[in-house]
Amino acid sequence: MIIKTKKDIPSSEITSESSYKNRRQFLKQGANVAMGVGVTASGLLSPTASAQIMAPRSAAQLNLASKPEWLAQKMANTTPVPNSGPYTTNEMLTPYQDVTNYNNFYEYGTGKQDPSNNARNFQMEPWSVEITGEVNKPGIYTLEDILSPHTFEERIYRHRCVEAWSMVIPWIGFPLGDLISRFEPTGNARFVEFQTLVDNDRFPEQNSRFSTIDWPYQEALRMDEAMHPLTLIGVGVYNDILPAQNGAPLRLIVPWKYGIKGIKSIVRINFTSEMPNTSWNDISAREYGFYINVNPEVSHPRWSQATERRLPSGLFDRRIETQMFNGYAEEVAHLYAGMDLRVNH
Image 1 (cartoon, rainbow, N blue to C red):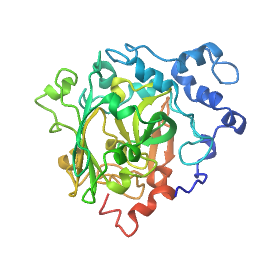
Image 2: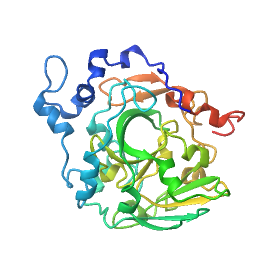
Image 3: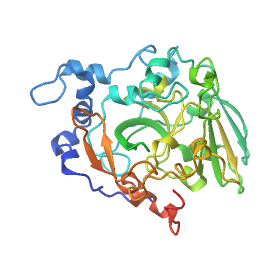
């Protein structure tokens, strides 16, 4: 059962009650920096600028070669974010410009702007996801097969990178647990493994002789983590389809873990009885554990995790204290009862 409680948030991060009660006004506040135009004296967007930030975007603006009409229509029927509980927050949204132009997606390059600069004309059709391993319904499923049975929901989650920066993002998606249940995992399925597409044409960095990652990029969850209601299959952001640089057409969102767990452009989901390898754990197990839970008490070997830089940044970085499990402790701490979180980091 989800325990819905108010999180401890610095007063400087809290939107006024009057703005929070009006969802669209709240979204406008979070978007104003992204547009840089049409800001009224109150600090909110003018109607023209607000329409720009919330309006659907063209395929070219999303760095996609095409924008499936069936998916755009389904996106338009998204269930709005609730007014309270763990699926939302009253923290200021990170502007769209930062969400889509400050990314880690090494298939496009190692720089933060490389994904948005290099993800041109990304082909998301045709797309298929292979389901393998300990399930009763394995197979190869098209993108429409995967998405059609599910109702999309908007959720506003904190996003915390292992590099000690953070965002607040209005995702669109549906619970991973609902998808998993459709494939009927067997009693032997203790872990769920995910793989990113390997395609040298779509992902230029996969051609690099100097890449630190042995492609495909792989991530995994324990089954109870995967089935947790907070765990999301992401298909959109800011009222529209995911841009290529944000992981189109499917990505994983696990808000209590560092962002490297959020694997993008998923093409394979495998169910296994053994703990799978994960890409960054293979590269450096000392720095990146399997669980990669947000924990301000466990420093990265090269920097502290006690605070984070909240984007967007101006002349001076805006640093805030990092919360245990990224502020979702009341919902997920029981998953790790009795575990040493310094060893199982």
